[in-house]
Image (tube, rainbow, N blue to C red):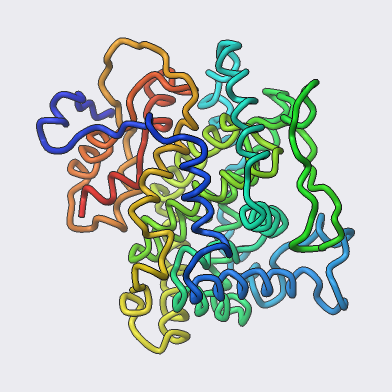
Length: 419
């Protein structure tokens, strides 16, 4: 069964549609910079430093410093992650089937016009060449920390973020750490299928290869191999952020924004295009909804969520709701400007095609993504919010009903409107 709600009907219910146009690349860069160590908030900067130091300590292990040879195999381990618990469950993540579903969802990529692809490259070059040093350093930390959860801490606010780092390193979040990472569906098959060259490999490109000044600190230019479309790191960022947002709905919107900010970092480094990031957002949203609608997965999720929330309250010494409250000046991921930034990352100002008006079709079960954030609303009301706050039609990668929905879904605005 599918649920159809016309844009006109939804507009009558309340509120305007989400428009993406109007945010320039410099404006988006300025907003992104507020979420880096260049922030004016000292508690936030301290949290950023704590997350970076914890990542480096975890990568280097017993060595005196991080060596480049360690990066490829660096991942959460030891007491950080409860592998035994997850293995004992016997849960089948059906990765191959979900990979193929992702390829089908992104099939519109092959039909994009050359003008869109050209602007796609131009946008990478502009963001990459004009990024601030702080934005580049943060992008490096996020890139090398892909297999860890440290990057999520700054979206939790200084107090809860610090508690998250401590609990994570003590092994108190082991079930959540195992489940979040196991829920990431590899983009490897999609990269092979679409076989798109990364921007720094395109003849005549002006990409700046960002030297490592943040993790290994050896000045080695950051690079990446394999195809570009869709982005594996962005898939990681969105999947982890969306799942943690379901576990900590007190920080739902900042965590959703964190996924968008993580994808932006891939463009800062010049290794991905906007389309790569946009495609991964679509796939990650679809995958998380798919898993959350599976009762067997949901059982594991609830167990991990219970452990995580209890551990964080213990570390905070207070209720999670109290620990999650942050003074506005120390909470850049909850700043009003992040709404603008999130909308920008849905399109990166790529050309919008003139298309015939069509209803937004909400796939059955997609509303589960708003369940934790808006528990007082019915499933039908959450679907209505998804329709009412949807991005305008016609932007790249939106084609059939499924593709259009996952490209146009604006979780930030839907969650805010529902509150």
